[in-house]
Length: 141
Image 1 (cartoon, rainbow, N blue to C red):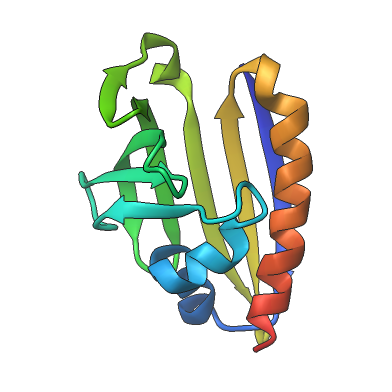
Image 2 (cartoon, rainbow, N blue to C red; image 1 turned 135 degrees about the vertical axis):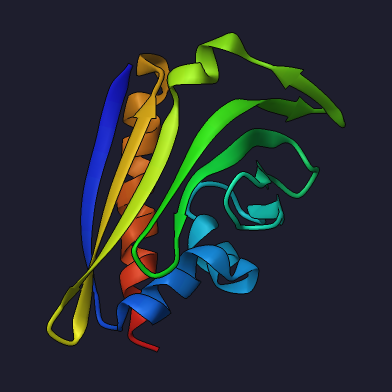
């Protein structure tokens, strides 16, 4: 298991930065860096199940394990959806996606930490670089 750790300086308040993650329309704009048409289904809230999916509905199933608005959100991955079928994946038990929002003057430092399987590290690390560029652009709007 490897960790992707990223830090993005966003030109907005923590409240606005938080919305880039939890507001579905805003999320879709930067998540396109992973796959065009990426979205999520479910509700962002503590102990809620959130599915990160592509245009066909395939993707990853997670549970929100930390939910502190404008400060921190953490997802624990449970399994995947393929062709409309949910499959629990034991190896996902250690996979986490964690965001922290810290105010810095009139900006927000967004810290991202993703624990993932080694075989996806290089690909996802590159995708997160592209996603970060989009997050920064969106924070300027």
